[in-house]
Length: 211
Image 1 (spheres, rainbow, N blue to C red):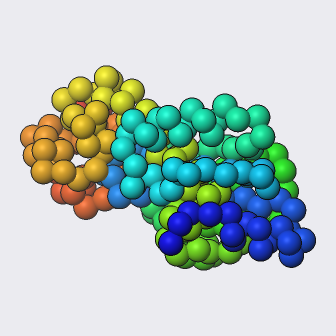
Image 2 (tube, rainbow, N blue to C red):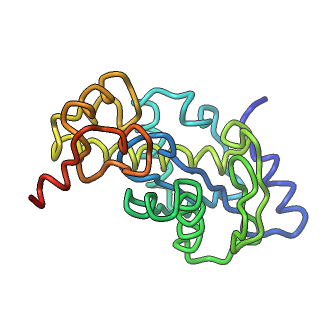
């Protein structure tokens, strides 16, 4: 099924003027933040390529990111929940909180928020969960692109700060190479210590810094 504005159009026709698409990037990695994005597309929006960020190459995502974020007709906002928040409340709650903050950052009260995946408990805005929404809704797909590119760029910056971990290659995901370095080096300050592979690593970078 193509990625369209069908869901948004049905809501607009039902009187929901401000429809927001929301998605996240980075729930699975062992390091770095989970990044969320909220997007409001104009009613006339069309795009032949835009779809789930996971289906597109990094180069194509960068092109789409530039298109989306430079279009004055598109309202968008990002938020990030860092490793500290993730460790404090768990990854799911941190993601949900970040989604709410991203919507709030739009500065416009939504009539409906289309969220990729399952319903979000105690979400402060009217919501409609859409399974595989990033492949169905252009608003959610746009959010998925923005969140993914923002997070990847952040992890490239972290790769320069902590070059031994190879974040530029795996972006913090638990690849074999990442796990091997983690066992040898222990976690760095941006690792999620509540995640089992990090908690089980033999050496704690932060503790060594404090020693």
